[in-house]
Image 1 (cartoon, rainbow, N blue to C red):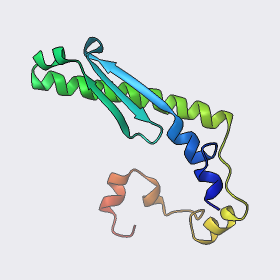
Image 2: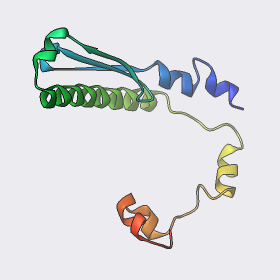
Image 3: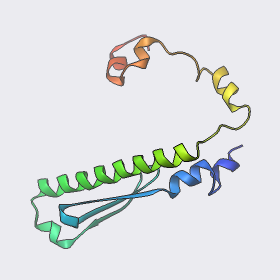
Length: 120
């Protein structure tokens, strides 16, 4: 069942084929991500080493954030154009396992709230 998803034209292949990049500090910091959010490249121009460490860290975070936002937009566009469909029979199986069941109200809220709730 997973063979069709692992192929390059399957959902996993489509996901890992997506690339996004972000730059910061006037192009001195460059970050590239794949569709899963894995860091593919972090390129630092030697001139960026002149920055204070706090500024360098902020530039890396900025470049990563830019790449992540670009990645999210690309993935939304890709999967809106070509949605992923579950293999025949998997939907009912997931429902039988409880993945389609309605969760208690406390579990539908943000994780911070559920962490305090002992019943979840």
